[in-house]
Length: 151
Image 1 (cartoon, one colour):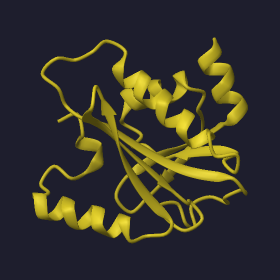
Image 2 (image 1 turned 60 degrees about the vertical axis):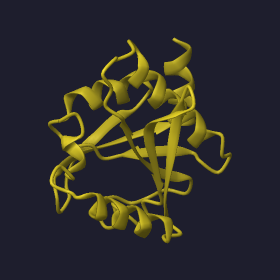
Image 3 (image 1 turned 90 degrees about the vertical axis):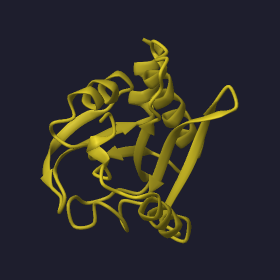
């Protein structure tokens, strides 16, 4: 249920495998598994919004990088873990000096991720209509991220 906004609730293992094989073969989209204590705990996707996800929905700027993240369900939630994950994801994205701004497009109804995004410096710009959802287009510059995590 926590991953409902990924719209893969009815996906089989084969469906998920196929989706990530497509990502692995795509020069404009990459997926990474994050570990916690050596165990897979979250997923990060990085994509070029000039070529994937947001084509025709906004005018990308040089240095824009699109991002998705998903935290694995757990029987023993750790307080602050999801915020630590998004902070680690943003740190990783901004480790690339070519990244000037991170772009996200979460579902407009995903209030939990809007709060997390705001906590790391994202500023909503406007709602957009994607084929699969109404999304909140939001941006975070390197400076906005640095200010948010140092506060």
